[in-house]
Length: 170
Image 1 (cartoon, rainbow, N blue to C red):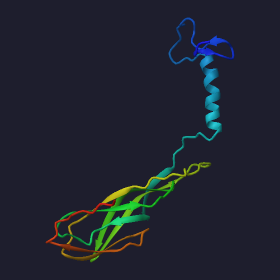
Image 2 (image 1 turned 135 degrees about the vertical axis):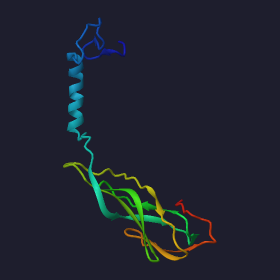
Image 3 (image 1 turned 30 degrees about the vertical axis):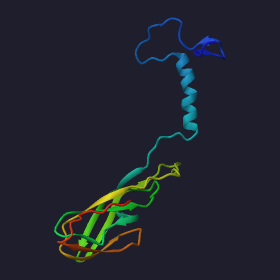
């Protein structure tokens, strides 16, 4: 029997002759083959529903940050933060840097998500690293921290004698 023969009925799955069908019409054989597969897909929770996400102003948890102890003053800087696993209910999309006096806060912002009824979070989550653009700083020492997550604090000195303008997480 060839690979294209239905072993249960002893019939070929391909028609012996190619009858002309109107566009968009399916044969009974195709429908009788596909319908049980489609029904099994949905019966086994094969719903392709995605979480419903909306922008959120709530700071999301940071796992790690990169800020050097010395950096250039008077130039735009690039620091980095790595998010903690937020599962299915949070999704970071960007980093925001806020300078208030000698305090520099790195904040991850993004979306808060709601799962469709009957859905579960996958056991795997993505953990991403984000660049944080920092406006040029005046010479001085800044306390660098995050709004949520890691308790790491870096005392970073901005100086005109330093040429480094970025920090990259490993």
